[in-house]
Image: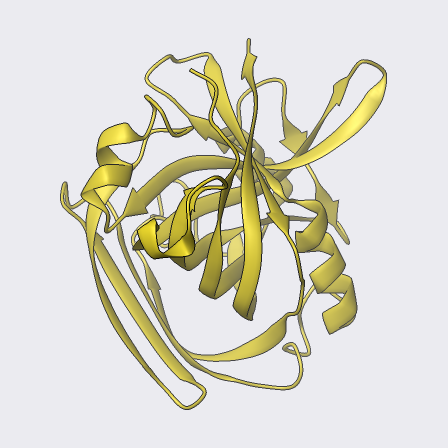
Length: 240
């Protein structure tokens, strides 16, 4: 079933980014993908996104749904028809929406797991914590909107980091078929990012020493977006 164009509002989006040794991160991505490196580092992280008024374009915003969602992401590229393509590989998605969880992998691209979110936002301070219902995923970030990226970030400037993530607008998610990856493209009608100064950060995925041995991964940066009108466009799946 082909996904219709979906429209809505990104009420809040936080991108928490890690820099990872390439040989460690490469073990987590399947063919045909390879890592998209920045200054010799692999880039992975979590996208925390609150969506509002999500609906097919032919419906009014008042009939749209809202939800908190999170996706674990790895920046990748691959060759197709003689061109190098850029995307993110998504090994796991979670959502607060029972509808998203039910339809994920069926109508919506990619398997999506139900989760509980606890969100506290006031002024420019943000705290988002999530725990999946199957207890496989826990994540917590707390921070305040800032002006600059950390000095040790792999991105030389905010504009460089913003361009990097704007180019990674296509995500390929795991499905219940081991060699098939569902594609979804985010088309932002506006684009503006601010740094988020992180005070607290916990991740059951990125702090797992079996996947990320000590010294192979470090927090790099976090970026904040708010009030972004956007559309979701289905992309053809990749089959290996």
